[in-house]
Image (tube, rainbow, N blue to C red; front, side):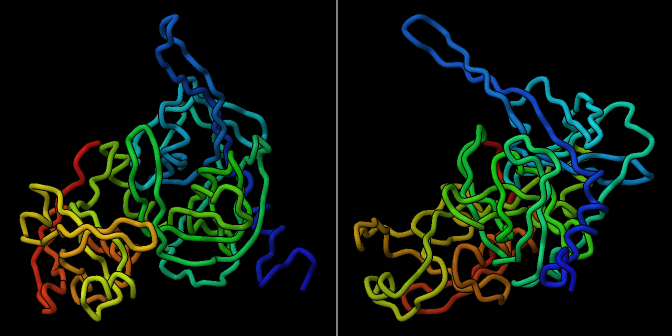
Amino acid sequence: MSNASVLGLDCVEVYQSASESIVTIQGSKITSFSTFFGQTKIIESVTGSGFVIAHSNLHYVMVTNFHVIDGIVNATLTFGDGNAYPITIIGSDALSDLAIVSIDNPPSDLYSLHLFSSSSLRVGDPVVAIGSPFGLSGSMTFGIISQLGRSIQYESTSGSYSIADVIQFSAPINPGNSGGPLLDAHGFVVGITTAAVSGSQGVGFAIPSDTILRELPSLISTGKYDKYYVGIQAVDMNYQLSQAAGTNVTYGLLIEKTQPGGPADKAGLRGGSQLISIAGQQYTLGGDIIVSIDGVRIANFDDFLTHLERHTLPGQVIQVGIIRSGQHQLVQVIVEAKPAQ
């Protein structure tokens, strides 16, 4: 094995085949706020990454993160050769942290990356991330898939929400990497890097390529993508909660509250009313415990969101298995489109 190879991944070959498709996105974000002296504006520079894909009939678009272009002004993208262009945002989904952008009169020699289904990924598979950390364009790091099916909490101008079915990987990423590709050993895109845990070493997250493949046609044709919505607030079950609730069920989701008028509420799923404290954390007991969807075991909130992300669309009926008063029941829930935030 050569010095360029790590865990069967030829880093030099992957970089050489992918680097010409990576772009750096730059612009500004303006934040306005009131002071005693009147309205004040703060202008911040924004740097992110993206990559070129061929959508259809050699129609090229660039993929990046929603949080990179959210509220951006005077946005441009720059290729590795230094050529820069103003961008047009043609579609975005904040709830998956995805955005699709394009440029006018693109060069004739554009190179595109190929999206490969992330469903084939396994924990331990080698991957590389390429992007522009701290504006250092074309930087590459390598690592492995650390886990699949994570969910992460995100804050944006659209509010606070969970991003489902996220890849965790160990390749170091930093501010500016956001929007760059996560590539497998063959140089195929299996994800788009989106976040790292602050202060961590090698705890990065990426939106899987299956999410991009699923949403891409709608983002390009309509500018948006309708996400699933069930309308519950819930917490992971554990041993301490099961003891407090008087049940032997230590997995699944304890529903603390249903959104009035939401799909879960309409279906008759129940939240709780009994407030308790465990190790300083407040919980609401008495609600249904979700243990399955369409016969698939749901162990925790990550499982719940990942299943909905991969297998449901607005208008679809799902069979939700619950434990209520110690008895197992099946409840039909009609999934709706996520309300605009």
